[in-house]
Image (cartoon, rainbow, N blue to C red; front, side, top):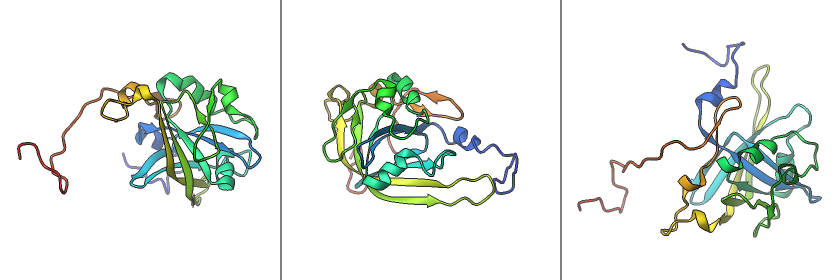
Length: 214
């Protein structure tokens, strides 16, 4: 089966979310110029670089306003926080997806505690095992091309602060992803915790790296 999305009028665009899966969830807290706090999950999210550390999330354009509250806040203040969404926090993550009026505090809506950030103003989700404080790098607008398309904005943020709960940091100083059980997004209303974890040594040697047996 082959489908050309440029010409297939009956294509359900949500199929791409089911194919490009699982995806990490961008659980983003932001704060408006007047101090109103927002917390919302985004299913289009990922890390771009580790040196420097840069992450991105993408906002589509909602039907009831010019842009999502998160995007408006980040555009105005240049700051946001990524909060790791986990399986244990799944119900709270889902509640914060409610399209509430601007000014609604989703922390309160989902029964979540706020924790102060260090280098940015927006608060963190206290119950989340890890949080990344970010400064806005740039916003890239994806223009619609065909009828039915909507504008999207990709937000790039440089990480300026990292918080990790001590119980999720190993003796070697690594973050214990298995213990944290990140929540991932699939297609439709499907979510999933991480499946079985395994390790595979790379079949190559990085520059300047000794290989086993040398």
